[in-house]
Length: 192
Image (tube, rainbow, N blue to C red; front, top):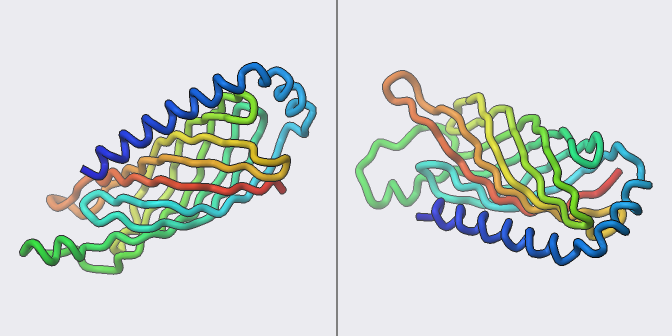
């Protein structure tokens, strides 16, 4: 149910981003000319705060830091380090299922590549992620896809929001399953 609502929020937010982008289309040519005079390659450091919805576990607050290196106006690479929890309290209260042992802390980190679609001050972008996720004392190879929007709030600051889906396998042999963890993050980037 919560993943269905999350998916609907993602669609609504990108619809709103599209409306905002089209509203700024008249000023986009002037803005493009201004931003193209800016240096091409930029470094951005960004703390994040959001929600992490692990598959089969309870949604929790997520926080972390991201680094973006914008190669040019359309392509970028970067890194992510995030922390969250995958609690089992609700499952423990309502059923007799044997719970997974280990720490409920989730650590996810890795590299990412982005493809931007510049439209003035508002830039939607696609994300491809590859890395590791540590969930219940087990490290798992992780890959994922995401969507984001960057809004240039100032010459040195950018506000971003991102929706990421991290995919990885947990468990061993017959008890293995594929996790589809969602992350929704608000990111405040500072250009170095």
